[in-house]
Length: 111
Image (cartoon, rainbow, N blue to C red; front, side):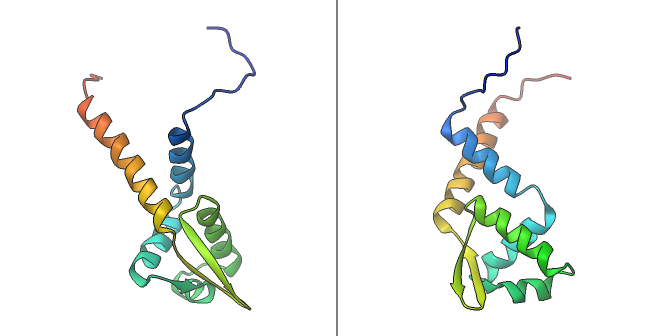
């Protein structure tokens, strides 16, 4: 197969799933999501108090989750209140459930 510099056109769901997976690719982000899911919403400072990480590190993790659409932030100067973005959260759950369900049925790979 000849390799080229052209990009691959992926299905929109595939790109969305990859974006969600990337955002979920760090244990701190998963822990933040679990906390937000339990508490419904939380200010940045409260999240910083829970995790033994620098405020700037927590902010970077929140930014990644927000960029992926898994959380949303509401500005209440000088604070930001974060919560789960239910629409995208449900979309991510659906994409991953469909993906793993399909792969579970096709487990004929022998190694």
